[in-house]
Image 1 (cartoon, helix red, strand yellow):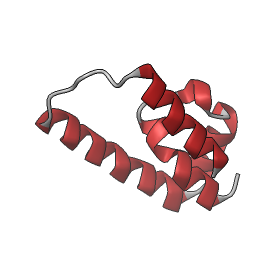
Image 2: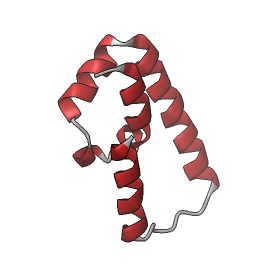
Image 3: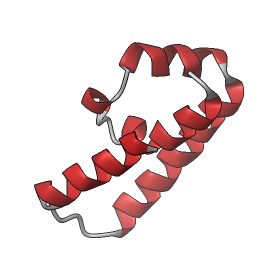
Length: 74
């Protein structure tokens, strides 16, 4: 997997929405690429900060589906 592809998927990885990801490929890339691994750590920290600062409401399933489709299209 190329780094630019992984960078587009890292939020799904951090959100544990791994059903939408080629899990083994992502894990293998993160194990071998320190730059992408660092990016994943930074994104995870950011997401945790936002979650701890904001009230969480469920995203409408239709919106979540549209977001996934856009990410996959890239």
